[in-house]
Amino acid sequence: MTWKIEAILFALVSITPTERLGVYIAEEAFVVLAVTAAMLIIALFFVIGFVLFSEVARFGFPWLKGKVVRIAGLDHDQLAHRKAVANPSRRSS
Image (cartoon, rainbow, N blue to C red; front, side, top):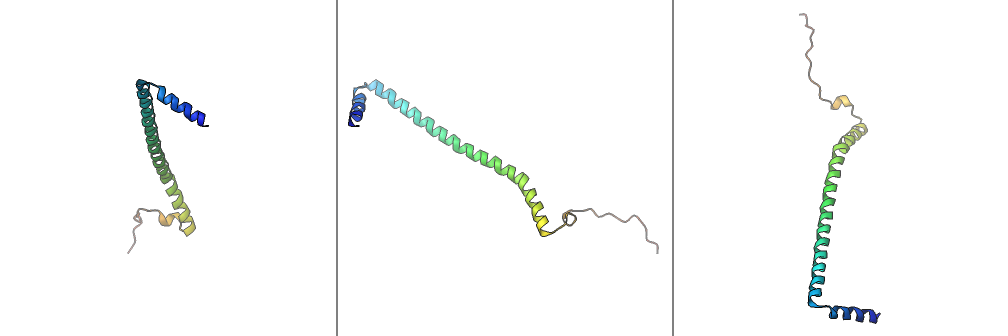
């Protein structure tokens, strides 16, 4: 195991400053790309969560209202808003 570490250290010492700069730039580019990817993944999770919540709200709340009405024993006519209709027949006095 120590010979591997010694080989790595020898390789790092033997490279020229120009090659070291290239390795540093490659490491920095990798870090920037990794951080950008992590931020995009987090943003994507928030967007997907928002879309799923809006769809659940759109379909789930009316379904839940129907279940609550059925459990409470209320009839649809009791909840429906009806217009008042005048009686067309005249009363005779």
